[in-house]
Image (cartoon, rainbow, N blue to C red; front, side):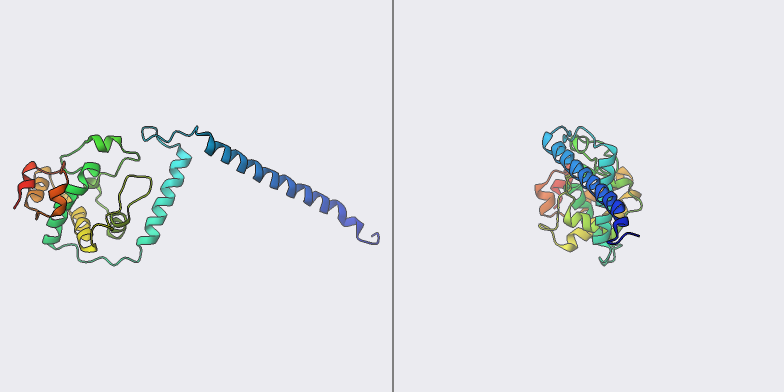
Length: 203
């Protein structure tokens, strides 16, 4: 071995070259990414679905975020019939236009949204913690509003209680339950495409 450790020079030069290549590739990827973002070529219209990779990233981000934020929520008793009935009226007024209802299978708003809202009348395995969190906080980039700023937790839990019941209802049972639901501010000011017109006149 020569004094000064000259034998180590070639490997060090190779490592330096490799590092430069890696850094150059990272810079190139960043440049291409920024150029793509500012180019405006990605179709952002709601009538053009995301590409599969983008959809996968968004879905994983959404599902993991909701799961992580909802896991410590304490679920009250959702079997109370009064709570379920109150939730029926709120669902018809606040949710049915996007999420539809038993016997109510289409709507202009539903068809125009992307991603399409889940049809909650068919959601037989709904997680009450996650449903409450989504109703309270909403979801970015989906059209799902946060109802927490305008409704207290008791009102939101009534909607979760009804969501647990709704998959069991026939269209007739759904309309009858909405018609019997207590009248409140939501039912007075919002259209109810998922409920009978006469529900507005409920005393």
